[in-house]
Image 1: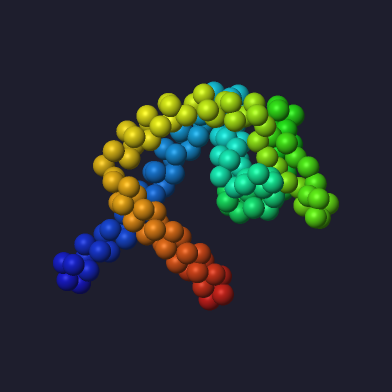
Image 2: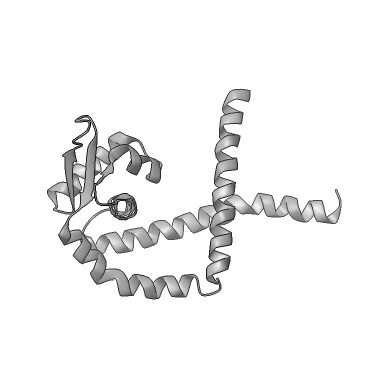
Length: 160
């Protein structure tokens, strides 16, 4: 194996460990922010997903489960707990009663607003080395890699 191929192989072998480490740290940050609201890290991520997905009409359980890469039953269970705590509203869709739409409450939006400056400061620290263009490029490459990994999983499932 030539030196270029060997360096590439090393990078490929190292990549999953770097991603796993990043994932652990992101998980820790989620737990930190969740703790400020008295909820779990998973529930915090659900709130963030709803904040992104809800365009004024609520977000369906299936849309949130896809965003979080979890089973819809998990979203249903957690959303009911968040509803009891007053963080989200759940209601049947007016088009299809089988579809549950969720949205954040005013209480949640106030909590998120109160944390915004801390989050912004932390994000500035974390992403200080990246320009807006570099972040766009990184996110684009990660999205492309995610699609290729999804296809690889399907390929492996078919081949084995």
